[in-house]
Length: 258
Image (cartoon, rainbow, N blue to C red):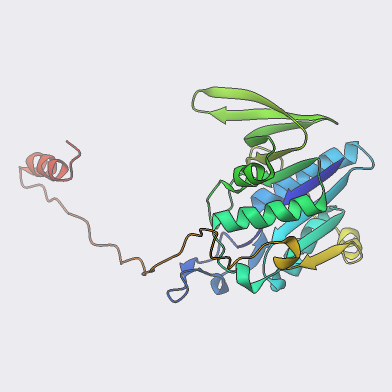
């Protein structure tokens, strides 16, 4: 079994988040870079299967700046077998379509039986990359799973919705995304950190994957402008002078609530 896990480096969720007003991209200087917590859970899901099935290979794939090496190696320290790191300045600020195209090409190159990803990153929050990767690859997708079961030929799991819990199943190869209902990632050990330094770690650019980020024939989203969020305006204060109820009703009516 070959499991590929898609991982992402994100700004620490406890740090301040701002947009760079010149580029329109996230200003990552205000927070420490970390492996996304949902991706740690995805790595854990793959490693849990590998622990119970000797011979399973777990490879992590990331599209990230060259400075993300330490973050990616954390997944190796957790127990992943190898890593594929796509580094290309032309991919800086890539939209969802280009990101999915690059990741799908990397996954295809790595070879896989199943791809596991988090359902929603804590920085971009698009929540569609796993489904888009599956679409590009032309294979089944099982997204937003709160439980995951793997076999040699199929994958199944539970998906919680407003209508109830759905049981979904698909044949391999397939792409799945998991929710925060799955177990947290395991802690890294000193032994694991030292072992990670010797594990296979491949770096390549978009061209090596057959991707041309600047191809004018391929439609991409383009950010036209960006502006800082305006400061919050003071709210309306109602002082009770015997007619507070009328004032409140008038305010709610003006706001379209009533």
